[in-house]
Length: 248
Length: 358
Image 1: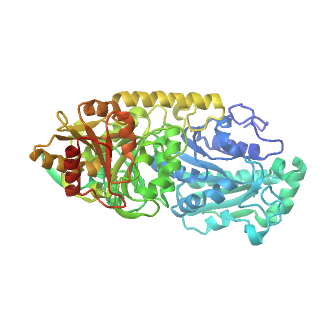
Image 2: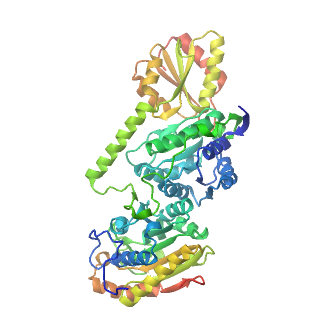
Image 3: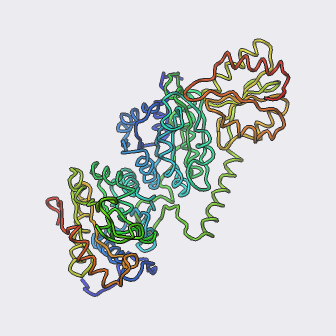
């Protein structure tokens, strides 16, 4: 097997629209690489959501459905029930999954839907220009928390993956980061385990990625990665919260 | 043919199963709950899937998912729940996904009550959700018609790649009447995989996309124009209505669903008195049979619209008739029903008055 660096075969070749230093590109690549390695591109259906990643279907050469804001996990439920032999994943941001789509994701996990959720947490609303997200950390400045998130009035950052892991229907739950190569490799392992969990019919699987948004955080890409490591990880600890036996 | 005594809500469910619908996503709300309950026990018998969603929003998005795979799929609710589904309905229409949505109407606005009503007419026929789109809206008036039009609804949905709404009310959903089933061979079902459905890129075929997003304004306008062209074809081909004693009618009643049954009762009584009264019953509320109504009303002197609402379809009747003759309105709302005796007396007075104002 060649160890050379190359484009994943699942890339369409279309240049990505993401800002410099945005980590969506890294996460897209990890998903593409794992699907390719598992050889499941002809049975995979992706469900995109609303946010910066709304055009994920432009970049990954897979069958895709574009879902309404927050509803991707309900759409994925309909797909998986209709086509149990396919591999179904959603790709959702923090505003999508952890605010407007909270009911859908919780009940998707409760039902143990055999789908895989990729949850991109960058602590901010990216596409609409940097408003507070449910995952914005305490004290973080955004356009709608201009003096920093005051938890006494704007609430605390929500830890979705821990919450979802408490449900019996959830078989695999992990939080990973992509701020340096070591963490990127660990993230890829989590993507693989989440897909294997689904393939083996064990239940609901979710991988939360801590992701950088230099543009809306108002800092250069390198500083953003540092900020992520120093500020987001203490609020959102990394690791596999739930892992079924036999999934490696 | 053998007759089966069935509740309206259950007749819809049985028709859906016979039409090849194998997926139902719903949420309980009175007065439609017998339909999800029927599907919960019936679908497993035919290898289908019933799922009780966490909300009507969840349910309509599950419909979006299953419809994207090319499956015949249904959801049902009543007023408040249908309002919650509007977001999803707009996406379904935008992405051109076939599905059948049932609204067994109850009293509104707000929580209203659980009595039968027809106050969701405007929401159903004028859009309801955001953007330029139309639903086909079918208005049955008997349990047999609930059965027949449910099968028709799946055909129309597939033919036009468009969501279809069955607009019933609490009385139709709850009452029992005999139903004759169609022989299975006479029920059309889609053959094989739909050429646009997402299935995974089987055999390495090019990727497919189900989406209502057209970020470039030129493209969205083009897409909407394409939808409008489709809606024009539907308007040309799919209007359905019933005429009852209209040939010589001096007063023409216009009503649909349960109101039409009451209006029919009034026509029968008034005919026995020798009065020239008829009924025009739209069966498709969108497309509304406007030209057909205008043709029937040509020789009438007055029109009386009867609804279980404060006056919604009457707007379409007035548009259809263009001010050529007086259009009166009699409606009861909030779960109340038009009163037959009152309606009969009202028509007698209209005839006596000769067709003056309201």
